[in-house]
Image 1 (cartoon, one colour):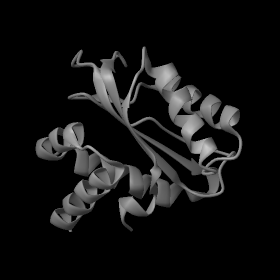
Image 2 (cartoon, one colour):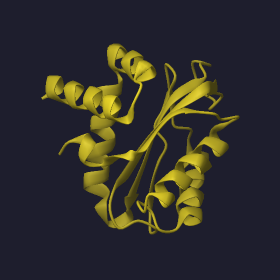
Image 3 (cartoon, one colour):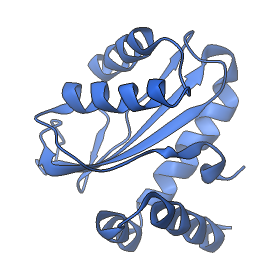
Image 4 (spheres, helix red, strand yellow):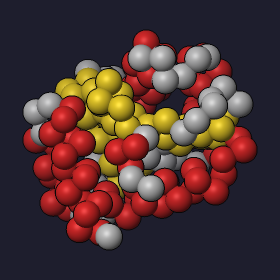
Length: 154
C-alpha cells in the first residue's frame, strides 16, 4: 500500500484561499467531485463535517487530517490542500492549519482506511516533509515528496 495510490494529482490543491475549515472542506470536496473521485459531494461533505464535530482533526504543527467513513464512496480517496493563509481549525497548539489531507473511505473498508490514516499520520510527523510540502510548486512535486518519504519509512 502506497499513499500515492490514493492521491490523484487532480486532488492536490496548492495555495487554496480559505477563511476557515468548513470552507476549505467544501472547496476540497468540490475538486474531488469535479474530478469524478466522489459522486455525491454534499453527502461526502456532510459526513466529513459530522466526523469533525466528534473531534477536531487538526493535529498541530500546521496540519489537519480530516477523515470520514461514508456511504457516498466506493473506494478510498485522498486530497491534499495547502492553505494560504493558514486557517484556524482549533488545533491544541493554536497554530493555523496550512496543510490539509482529507481522507474518505467507504464504510466497508474500515481496515484499509485505518492503515492509510495511520501511515499518513506517521509520515507527516516528519518535520522535513511538512516543510517541503509547504514549498512544493506542483502536484507532481507533492507526489514525489510523499513517495520519497514512504521509501524512507519502509
